[in-house]
Length: 144
Image (cartoon, rainbow, N blue to C red; front, side):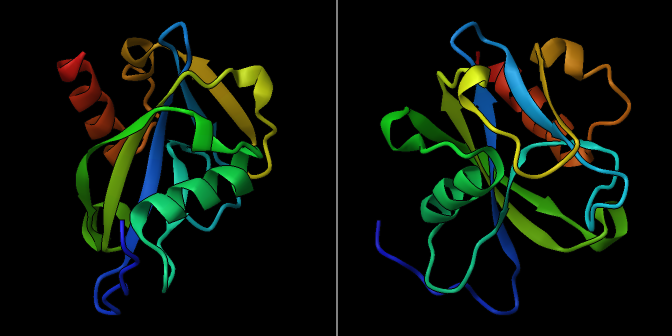
């Protein structure tokens, strides 16, 4: 995929819904003092930087946040989700990918308070998940 320049008017991000070999998901529990979504359960990922495309950002963010290289794993785009200032604190177009087959033992938490490993169905009952995470999980379950 060719590199694209990120439109400076539209903040974009790439996030990952990580699925283990047993079908459980990995989420990040943010610290209480995190700049975005403090104390919440979120997907891993971050902002697309100038000169990056969404997949380059995805790979970089997972190296930074979990110390894993996803080059050898299967991943596919689930969709795009719109964060808004009113609902989420920031206007951002979020590209979400599902990354399959990650063993939680192969990850090292580099950002956040902890890694949550659970079923998507169970996580949907947790009041601490973000709005975007809830939308992503519902879409993922519909496609299963």
